[in-house]
Length: 174
Image (cartoon, rainbow, N blue to C red; front, side):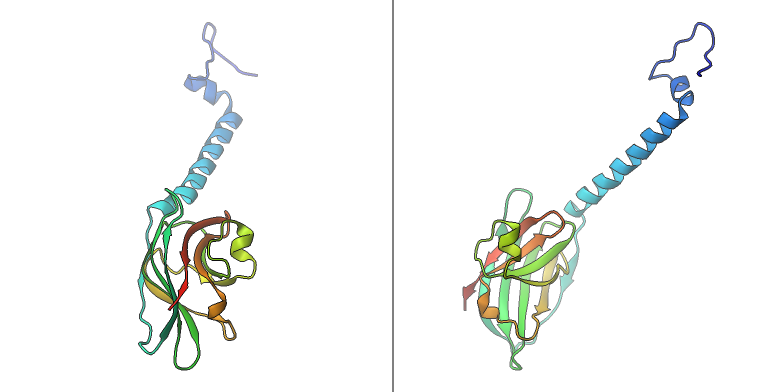
């Protein structure tokens, strides 16, 4: 039961109203903290950038190449994806002059479909090359032994958590 001075009225705007309802105040503060945490998780990748620059041995021969492009106004990408094979027979995917809108849970896929549009297009028959190393720069992924790099027609930057395509590089034979 609320105790209020005679003649005073409790309104949602008054400090007394919140003091009289500590459980409501606690719930509001908890929900606000949770909302801020979710907002940070979703929005921070848009302005937090990571950069990586790796080198690949010059003995690798290009098998296929493609350019990343913007998926839409939010999911943007640029740079080159190149499938390579070195003198030992190992295959690699190299991303160069690369830049993509950052996001949570981003992975690099090689797909047999040149223009994937859905989750199934990206994942069915595809090779998950690995977690995206950085949102900018140039870096290389080693493909697993036995993977046939000629079977893939696109490199895709994909958010696994939200099933969202960030950028696609259709590959053409070199």
